[in-house]
Image 1: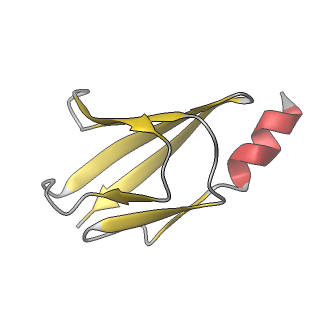
Image 2: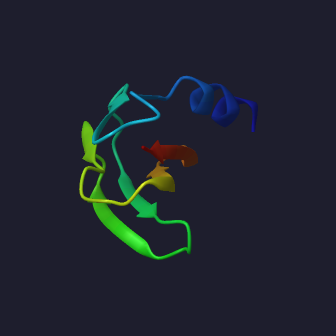
Length: 79
């Protein structure tokens, strides 16, 4: 819906690309999952303010946020 699209555009992840920590703004209520390039889950739980990619190899990851308003998809590039 249009409401979800507006909300999606207002979610910022920074810094992205990252070498380690990624911060989400604004902080949302809900759960998250992080997938690596081959689709394996490398993290899951309650949405938090920062996500640590420092122990992951360089590549592209998918962060999926599940909120009451729907799913939000964000790519994270680890350098």
